[in-house]
Picture (cartoon, rainbow, N blue to C red):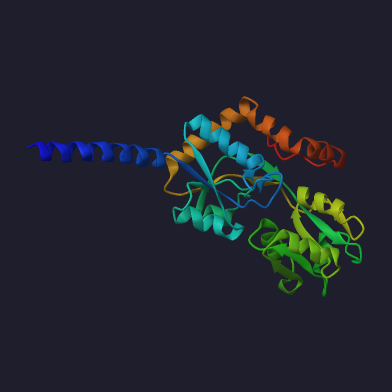
Length: 267
């Protein structure tokens, strides 16, 4: 009898803590990001996730009472990670589009952007329509809204697809392509970095702004509802703007001087 009691006590000692750990682990929010778009998603000097999106994710986790873990991955792997259950949701400057909405559900918008052009100073291109001409070449990052927009509005033979934005920028800087289509912030930053070889065009050619949302599996409606409610709270209590000022305060001033609408002016 004593041996049986000892076995039972031993099982209790080991099983209860194990169950507690499993419960804690199951409460963790795993959030997918491509940490390659500063100041929104990036890594710090110690290679830890950092940026606006990381701090927004932390604020959401805190409000929900759930620890978070950032899962870094390539852009093209973000939506598959949602549908396969590898992550709970994606927070990675992702534009809400009809095509994506067929696969995932999106949260309420938390930011907006517009497409712009980084143009080689060796090119005669002045605006988006000039890229329709025979022989013109535009670089796009695969799977982005710039890629989608170019595919719908330019000849297929004029489009060159790259996996990374920085490679596309170098192609423009070296005069190998006429332009690169991407969001206004990235275009502006790279026009400064490659000031001698590129120029930026912020002329509006889209019918409307692009809105960013967090992406969820279509079966995960409760988490979507919880995050939407939390997002509204963080917008209303000023937390979103507080994080934005930390990471994009200087950029906001630049946008104002350029006459560009800022990311978080979504009303």
